Amino acid sequence: MSARPLLPLIGLVPLLAGCGDTGGLVSAGSTPTVSGPVHLWPDRRGASVPPADPGGAPPEYVKGIPPVRDQDVHAVDPVALVQAELRAHPDTEVGADGMPPRTAAAIQECPKDEDVKEPEACPVLKPYYRDLTGNGKDELIVGIEFPDKMMSVRVYTADPDGRLNRIMATTETVITVELAGRDVILRVPSGNRGYELITAWSWDERQLTMLPTREQIVRVPGNQGAPGSREPAPAPGRP
Image 1 (tube, rainbow, N blue to C red):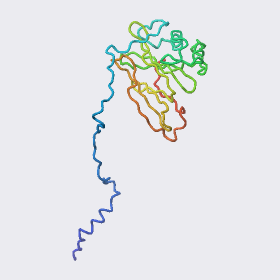
Image 2 (image 1 turned 30 degrees about the vertical axis):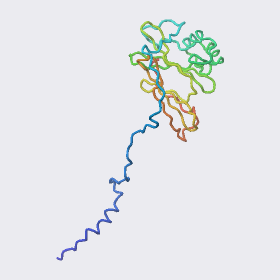
Image 3 (image 1 turned 180 degrees about the horizontal axis):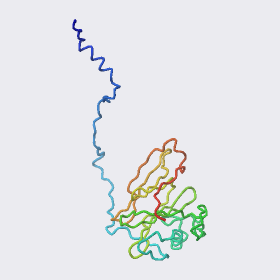
């Protein structure tokens, strides 16, 4: 039997090169060179950051409510809490305690019966609970609806002496409010159409308050719908 002639090896090269769809690695080209940030105008004298107060932020105790036993904020009535703040800061429309007069008047008329479920009748929303400070005790998270999709988000913690201390207060045009770990995350419309600003508020154990620690501007997917169409996804506490 005659031997089968061998194909020249050079003829196999095109055949092997044509099998690039078999799942093997394919080169994507040269990798761009990674370079670190370049300091522009190094001779310019930049602004300075004032040092933080070594004693931390002064506490903002809520006056006019009963002492909180065993630091259990679940026993605090959020409506009575906000009403106490209104009495302590009447006719205040700007700042951390600011509130539109129409909203303040509606809060004063909120029903006392906890079984009444009329979200539009009372601007103080259902409370949420989460340990945000890491002390093993839940904090109280309160939302207050303002006109034009604006919202006041406030967080309170109880100290061992039973005093309720407000550690966060911000008013924004809110898309959603979320809880992620020990962070309160607010999504608000950014100044650019099609983008939203995500801000994470975190406990600062040195300043003894919640501070905005991270911000990110992200593009809103085209199929997401109009702002405000998403439901917030905070984790509820125990009843």
